[in-house]
Image (cartoon, rainbow, N blue to C red; front, top):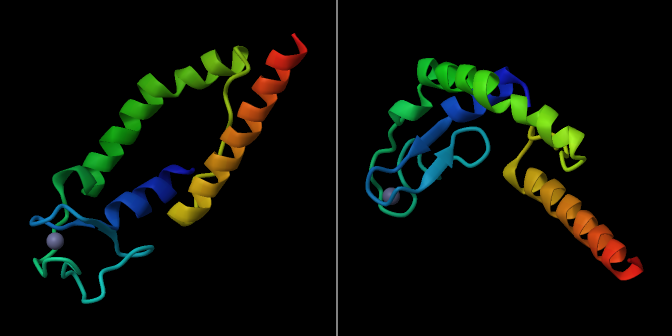
Amino acid sequence: MSDKAVLDRLSARRTCPGCETIYNLNDKPPKKELICDACEKRLVLRDDDKPEVIKDRMRVYHEQTEILIDYYSRKKVYFKIDGDGIIETVFEKISSLLDRELARSQEVEITK
Ligand SMILES: [Zn+2]
């Protein structure tokens, strides 16, 4: 997922200050503009989801987390999933990958 896609997704996120439901103005908007479907409070942009904060979180990711890709790749337990797209599609990709890897690890167990 590109930095721009992360920025677009997170900065479109709005949270209900009443019941904490999270909406996304692009993928999962409330029925009434900026009003919570469940409790009708006005949705807010959390500090965490402000563009300057998101950019800082991405900087930390690149500096501290990205190095793990190399580490797990060498152990052959790193799998890349395209996180662009709607949540259900990304979830489906993760589920089928896990199913496939689980099935493969069980085959390895049986043949040992
Ligand atoms: Zn609410």
